[in-house]
Amino acid sequence: VFGSILNHTIQSTPVNGQIKIRCSRKDNQQVISIDNFGMASSQNAWDEGNNSQTFDIVRKVVHLHQGELEIVGTPDLGTKIIVKLSAI
Image 1 (cartoon, one colour):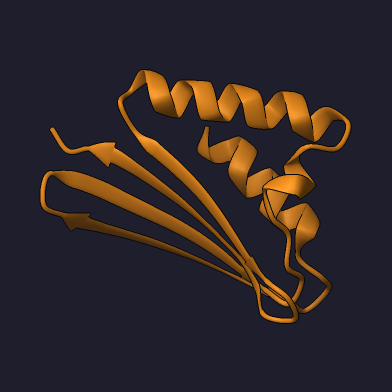
Image 2: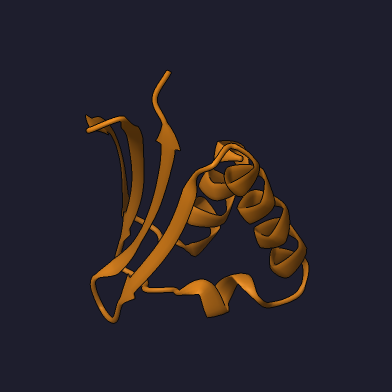
């Protein structure tokens, strides 16, 4: 799951762009956020070509683990992908 998300994030990040990965725990959830700075995308960016199949697999795997997946794109600022999973 995270390999696919990182691969897409790297491909969506412009040269000299930055990627930030954060892990935290909130209540009974592990929260992993992956931000790229520079080029915004959204769930729509995942809906193109092979990305669509990849996104479906990522989403299904996260949901199989009772998790949540959120993609937030902000024009000219970048994209944040948030995965929330139950903490063990």
